[in-house]
Image (cartoon, rainbow, N blue to C red; front, side, top):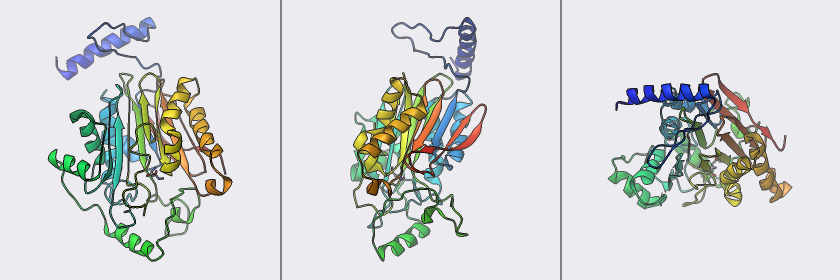
Length: 347
Ligand code: SD4
């Protein structure tokens, strides 16, 4: 059956079921389980930071045609990955302290399948390599040389990801060689533009994106060049399933940004999803996870740390929460296209 015909059949079926007030197709063995989204706001896509807006727009092109959330999130995050002016994701990302741009990414679908690459060099779209790992290997995660080998064997091309701007900034950094994880806290000097005003749009972090499609299925993707000037071989939370991203199609999906070490310690995104399972709404769940990080830290350390969580539940409700001010997230559905400032524990 053609895609269009199956979609028409699906639409007629879903309209009838919605009219009858039923929320779920009964299904027997071998038949696909089709959940009708209970929110009038689905499909929906949300992603971290204000640069998420452009990524959401690309994802929306897939979602609005009743495409799969998995395709939407991959398509969406490829936008910042390919943008050389974005210095925290993909091409143009800031390098490690030895000058290598090393990328971390993961992806997860509605069936709990997942794929991930860490410390991958020379490939513009690590998210697509992660999807390849998920779909074409028996593994979840490939790292470093092995991940590159796999990418090259699967049609990806080797490219230089270090742009002149990132290289020049790295050389400046080398003069003092002082590693300070980016905080991405409002009014931090590094977020200021050339005019000295806060909010340089080029200074952002990881993109984490989660989406709910017209079929009621959730998927997520997360991709980053990680903390600038990190140690060679350092891997953050972003490619770690459960830390930087987690999807449970019964409950919701969550993703994170900020200092990855803090997120890994509490397996943050999995925690957020489990908190939603216990009945918290997305913002409350993100807040609880942030509070857990705070409870395990010291005021001195927290002052220099930013972590933000973003979550979407099965009903299409969304929310985010951060340790510090300055964390924004972008939302796109049939009704709105908006960037929200997340609430935070500290001001
Ligand atoms: C990491 N979480 O590598 C990523 C980077 C990031 O704000 O989001 N920084 O730890």
